[in-house]
Figure (spheres, rainbow, N blue to C red):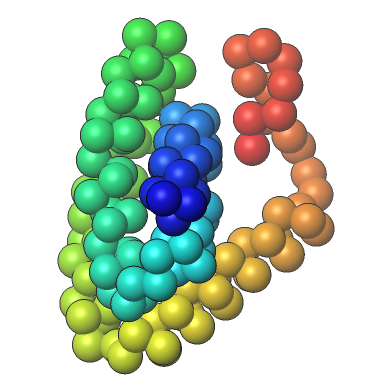
Length: 131
């Protein structure tokens, strides 16, 4: 029962973060591994499945709020699809432990980058941080 509660709260937290455009996988994958202990490939696959409906809901709301720049998004989508194919091919060939370590190093690198990032902060619709 406790495991289900943890999974439900994890889904809620990851959904909120996804809706804000920050990528819920950073919360979802580690929480899944800690709470349910699936193989790393399964945790990352569940994250991909989770992304489809949460991405559609978030995108619908952001389109209604006119906060999407499609001229910037289309090239990113095209090359993102190529990257997704390459990343999926690579993930399928890595051992679960190696994939887990790679994901951990990625999260660590992104955290360090965000802690020391300097420069202009974009202003969102309400004047807050957007980056």
